[in-house]
Structures are given as C-alpha cells and as structure tokens.
Length: 312
View 1 (tube, helix red, strand yellow):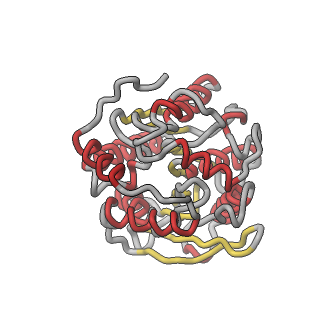
View 2 (view 1 turned 90 degrees about the vertical axis):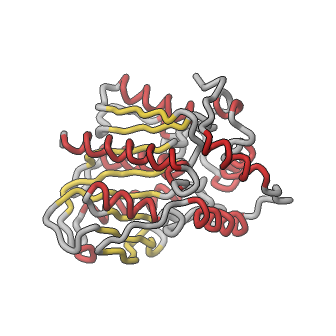
C-alpha cells in the first residue's frame, strides 16, 4: 500500500523543487556521483555535534582493513551497548563523511558510543563485499577491541537505504551465529529489502529524490543475486530476530519494501516498532538543515530507540 495523494510538507516541496531543478547528468559515473553526494550533504545536512571522541581507525576484514570512525559523547565510560552504523548510498556512493553528522547526533542524544563502517563499494567491489565487511566489523566490535577502550555489552545495528539493508543482514547473521556481545536492536531506516519494481517504486519513481532509474543503476553495479537472503533480506526468516525498529518515508520508492519488512517481523512475533514519516523523502535523516521536519522525524526515531533499549 502506498500514499496515492501524498501530503507534501512545505519544506519538502521547496527541497524537491530545488533538487529537480538541477541538470541531469549525461551519464551516471560512480566517482562523479560520489562527489556530488558529498557536496549535497554539505548543503543539506545539519552541522555535526561536538563530542568528546571522534577518531578514525580500522578493523580487519575479508579483503583487508575496513575504515571505521568511532564516536562517543563521553571521553570514558563503563560497559555499555555500542551502535554500529552503516551508511547509505546504494552500495555505490556514500562514506564516513556523508553520514558523519548523523552519527554525532546518535551518540549525543542516546549517550552511547557509535562505530560507523565504510564497507567496500561497487562497482569496484560488487555483492557480497558490502555484507561481508559489515559482518566482519560487527564481530570485531562485539569482541570489545582494545582500540576502542570500551567494554561492549551488546550491539545496535542501524542504517538507511542500503545501510538499512546491511543493518538487518548483519543482525540476521549475528542472531543466527551469536558474537561475543549479543544483538540488542536493529534500526532500519527506509531499507532496501527486496527486488520489487511495483507499488511505491512506480508511484514515487520520478521527482522524489531517489528515482527508480538510479535504483536500477545501483543494482546494475552492485550485482546482487536475486533471491539471495544477504542481498534481499525480505527472503530471510524473521524468526529469532532481535527487537526491531523499521522506518519508512511517505514519498519514497522504498516505502513498500520497508513496510513488508515490518509486517514480516511482526508476523514472526518480533518486538517491533514501525514508524511511517508521511510527507518525507528518502534519505531524510541526512537532510536536517534543509528540512526542519526531517530533524523532528529523527528526534522521533531516537525516542523510539531509547524506548526499545530500556527493555534490554
């Protein structure tokens, strides 16, 4: 089910008018799109919060070192959960800088450490490089590595779009084969979960920020295997999954995919909170300077995270 008459928010209308006025590129080139995405975030995302700790480091991965960024609002702390963040960008664009401000917000407002992962990107590294790196980083983090100076009591995976996909794929892997610290919560922001081309993919496929053409381009480069549970997690079992928060946006091509994931979790008896942000676009969590209503939506997500973490 999709919003047939979407209730556009005033700030979203102005934002989409600006985005849609930009000239379309003659061709989609990965490095050009990466640079453009970084530039866009500098314009539309809120300024980062001041934290006691922000440092770059790395962990071992299946094909070499995986770049990471560690955040903590406190200089020191006792044993605690850690938030494991996976950036979005269709498995092709996005990096530690494009989602830096959101990671600072999560640490500051939740009073928890955050570890952001820059997994390998397509087309240089197609599927399954991204989920392989994310699982490796999660298992490394669960072992309370000395480099962080923190005792990790549990993991919270979170990400948007492709990052939401990787957050649930990683959570599934750690629920199936537990790591040194347990999965406490997964937070899926407008996640990509299946291969669908109908419903919201058609309704919002043009002029709503993320387009169906760009989605096709991402998948052409990522080269996922149809039906593969680590590429399209809606095909995986939801039984035994950790508590979950699923967030969808009302003007998003991936809206239906997120709803189907929330339905599946509920049907499997998983403790689940579903938040639908009517009138907002895909990737709204990193457009908080341009969209005041997006900032309010992020505050609701953080409030839901606090609620769910009170139960663990």
